[in-house]
Image 1 (cartoon, rainbow, N blue to C red):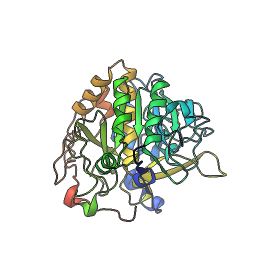
Image 2 (spheres, rainbow, N blue to C red; image 1 turned 180 degrees about the vertical axis):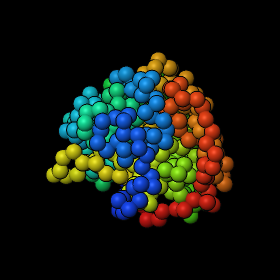
Image 3 (cartoon, rainbow, N blue to C red; image 1 turned 90 degrees about the horizontal axis):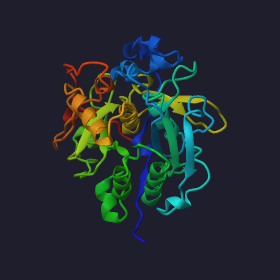
Image 4 (cartoon, rainbow, N blue to C red; image 1 turned 180 degrees about the horizontal axis):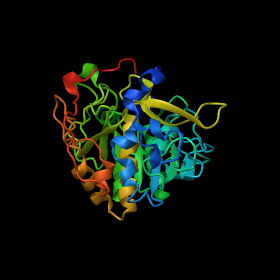
Length: 364
C-alpha cells in the first residue's frame, strides 16, 4: 500500500471575526428582492458574481453536485430537501464499494460548502445557493477534525460520480506536489470524475506565505479540474489565497476577506446539539462552491462539461487581477451572470491583485 497523505478541510477555511454590525453597511448590497430568504441580503458574494441575474436563465435543473468533504447536515432546513444521496467513505481505503452509512456532518465545513453551492431558495429560510435548483450527492471523506486520507477522498469522488454527480466540489486545500511525492494522489479521483463527464472544482488552498505567492502553488499541469482562488467583497484577491500556478483551468471567486464577518461568506453550518445554523467563514473552500454551483447552472442549460468550463473561463471578469509573482493562468473573477448569458461580459476597473499587495492572515 502506498503511503497515505492527509489533507485538512479546516485549513481551507478561516473562521470569521466578529464586528459584523459595525461594518455591515460597507459590504452588504441591497438586492433582497431576488429571494425571500431572510439572510439573502447578507450574501454579498451572490450579487458580486451576478447570481440573481443568472437565475433568470435557470437554477441548476436538478443537476447533481457532488460534495466530498466532512459531510452535510442532513436535517438542515436549507439543505435537507436538496440532498438526494449520501454516504461515509472514511476507512474505505480507496474502495468506493466500501463507503457505507450516511454523510452526516460532524464538523461543519461540508455543510458550509454545500449551502454556498445549492441551498434552497425562496423557502423563507436562511440563505440561497448559487444553484438552488441543483441537488446534492454527499460523500463524507473527512472526519470531525477536518482530516482524511487521500484514498478515502478518491473513494468519495468515485462514489458521488457513480451516483450521478456532474460536478464535484473539492474544498480540500491539499498540496498536490507533496501529495504525489508521498504516494497516492488526488489526480486519480479527479481524472475519474472528468472521464465520466463530471467537472471537478478544486480549492487552491490558503497557504500564500507572507502574501508573496511562495507556497501553496501546486504544479497542477494538465489536471482536468477548475482550480479556484479567493476574493473579498472589494474584488481583491484575499491575502491567504494560494497562487493558481500553472493550472490548466483557473480563476478566482468570492471566498471572503478573512477580516470581519460582513466581509466573509455566510452559509449553512453544523453545530453539535443545535439545528439550522448559519455562519460566516472565509477561504478558498468558500470560493470553490461558487464555481461548482455556476458549473451546475450551465450544465442545467444543456452545455457539455468542456463547454461549461470554457464558458466560465471566457466570461470571467478579467478586470480582476489574480496572478502572482510566480505567474498564473488565472482567467479572472467568476461571473455567473455573464456565463449563463443573462448579462454581458464586463470588465471591472480597479480590481485588486494578490502577491505583494495581499495582506496575509496567519495562524490557519
